[in-house]
Length: 125
Image (cartoon, rainbow, N blue to C red):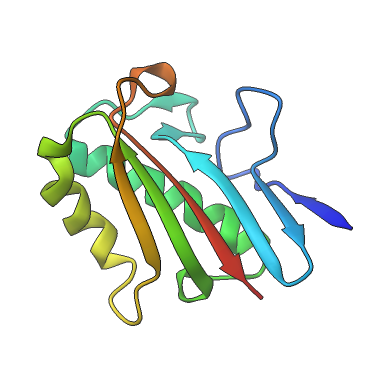
C-alpha cells in the first residue's frame, strides 16, 4: 500500500507525479528543483542559491512525512554542468554532516524549466 505525501511548503508537482510516496517504511521523494513555493518563482541566482532552495524543498517534504535529513538513505543529483559539482557539493554537504547517504551525481543535457540542479532522495522511517 502506498501513501502520497505532499507538503504545502514545497512546490506543487508540475506533472503527473507526487512530491513523495510512502510505502512500508520507505519514503521516495521526487526530484526537486529550485522553485520557491512562497512566491512560485524559480531561484535563478548562483548555483549555491539554487542548490539551497532544492535542499529546502526536500526538507519540507521530509518534514511533512515526519522525517529529517538524518533519515535519508540515498540521493540522486542531476546537474546541467559537472563544472558546478564542487559548489553544489558544498551546499549539499551542510545537510549531511554526519553519516551522509549513498548518492550519485549525473550530468544531464537538460533539466525541467532550464534549472541547473535537481535532487531526489529515498529515506526510511
